[in-house]
Image (cartoon, rainbow, N blue to C red; front, side, top):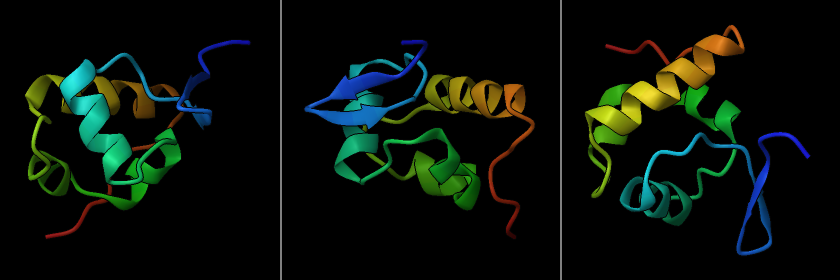
Length: 73
């Protein structure tokens, strides 16, 4: 069971980021936490509905797994 949620029958392990950010992530195809390791914070902030709070929640969830956002200039 754990933290895995199902969003429209698709497995999703994202933290509770709020509905606007969750919609933005799922519409962009980001359903799994590990996908965020390939993205920068700046890339995510370009998505409508994603703000600093959602970024912080994703950052903490990644850090808890020893991971982080991509580090590109």
